[in-house]
Image (cartoon, rainbow, N blue to C red; front, top):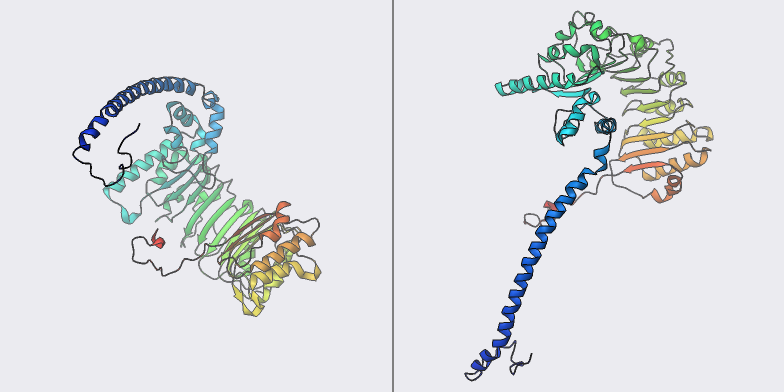
Length: 483
C-alpha cells in the first residue's frame, strides 16, 4: 500500500489544508479492511474458546478415567501398609501432627485413611507434649485433656504390639491414662523431670513385662532410695539412661542384664573404683556412656566386659595415670569416643597407644591447641595413630569422626588419610567425617580423589564465609546484606 505522504510519516510534519481531505480519503479502504480483520479475529477467538472449552471437558473426562488406572490404586493393602510404615520417622517417636505420618496419611483419601487406621504398626510410637506447669490455664487444661484422649485413642490402635513413648512436660493424669497399656510398654523416655516420681512407685515389675529401656532426664536424691520403685526391676530391662545426683549402683535395676548404660553424675565425686564397681555389675554391656567430673581413687581389680563395643567416658578424666592401663584391658573394644578434655595432656598419647588392635570406630572431640604438646591435640592424635614404631596404630580402623574442630589443619588431615590408605594394606579406612569450625585453608579433595574413587567415604564440612560486618549500602533499602 502506497501513500503520497510516505516520506512524512513518523515526523513532526503538519499537513496543509489541501492534504487533510486527501488523507481521509486515503484511509477509507484501509479502515474498512481493519474492521473486517477485527471481526474475523473476534470470530476466531470465539471458535478457539469453544474448542478450548470442549478440550477441557474431554481432558477432565480422560484424566478422571486415567486416574482409575494409576498403579498406586492397584497396590494391595499389605504393600501400602509397608509404604506407610516406611514414612514414619526413624530417629524419634511420632508426633501428634497432621504434617507428618501417620496422621498425614489418613488425610489423603478415605481408602488410605482406612488402611492407616487398620495398620497397627503406625501407632506403636508416640511423643506426647504437655504444657509447662507455669503455663497451666483453663485453656491448657482442656488441651491436656484432649491430648490424653488422643494418647489413649492412638495407643488403642496399636493392637497388641510393643509401645515406645516419650514425654515432654508433665501431667498428673498421664500415668493413669497409660495404665491400660503398661503391659505392652517397651521403651519410655521422660524428656523433662516430672515434679514427682511417686506415680512410678505404684508400678510393679509384673506391670511392665515388656519394658526394655528407661530414659529419665534427671533422677533426684531420695532419702529412702529407689528400692520401692519395682518398675526399674522389669524382667526385660536392658537399657537405662539418666542423669543422677549421685553415681551409685543402688537403683533397683537388674544390672547383670543391662546391655546399654548411659549415666551422668552431677556431683563430681566419681572415683575410678566407683566406676569400675558399677561396670563389674554389668557383664552384658554393649554400649556404655558414663559422664563424670573427676576420676581417681584406690586401684580396682580388672573388669572384663566381653561384649562391649562402644564406650564413652566424658567430660573430664584428668590426671589419672591408670587410664592407659584400663584401655589395654579392653582387648575387644571396637569403638571409642574421646570427649573434649577427657584426658590430660600427659596421658593423651599414652591412651591412644593403649587402644587395642580391634578398634574400628574412633570419635575424637576437638580440644583446640595445647602448647604442652606443641600444637593441636588432634594433630598429635593423628600422628600418634600413624607413627607408633613406624606402623599405624589401630590397623583395623574403619571410621574416624571429628564432629567439631577449629585447630586441626587441612594439611594434617591430608597426611593422616594418605598414610592410612597407603601404609595399611589392604586399606581398612572406609569413612572419614570432619566438621571444621573455621574456613577451609587448602582444598585437599583433589589429592584424595583416587581414594574416594576407590570407595573412601569422605565428608568435610566448613562454615560459610563470613560477610563484611559493615556494608557500603548499610541503611539503604537495597542493601544486599539485608536480602
